Length: 232
Image (cartoon, rainbow, N blue to C red; front, top):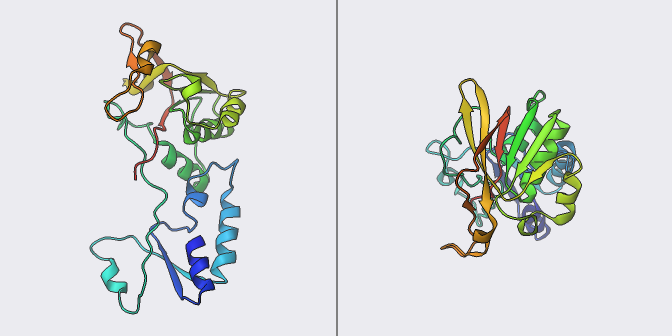
């Protein structure tokens, strides 16, 4: 939207394409409701739409591609912000009741009835993980556990956001976690992480966290929300 507004200032006719039914991107779908309500995002969209651009909801694919819109187009700007979350890469992440944090936030912002159950496990330590944990509390969860495999000091989340969340969320640093099930019950398998291993850099330069054998335990829950960062 910012790009469209700047282009219009220079006299360019602008059309914005989006593959979701509502415009606004991250503000509409990806920021927790307590930080940015959907209605405020759509108000901003309408303000800019009335001034500078037309909006078309399109899902790109074989039947709808740029070739159909090439005529008369002098400049194409692609700006995708609401990407997919990183995968855990472990058994269990495809089980029912496991929903990544961005999809979790998008669904509760757009669905009138979105239940999370009594106990929710969030896996991660970034701002999106904090948003998901706080949102689960506001959606009625009685217990929300935040598992992070490194120390509190190494959490990428803003310190004030993390400190605020600890009023309602049980944070468990130095804990690895994986989704699982026990028959009809959902569970999160957890285990301690060796603090000494934190300081050893992995191949990508990130600090590695190594599980401590024999420390595994299960937490029965209604929903597991992985929040491990975004993929480009």
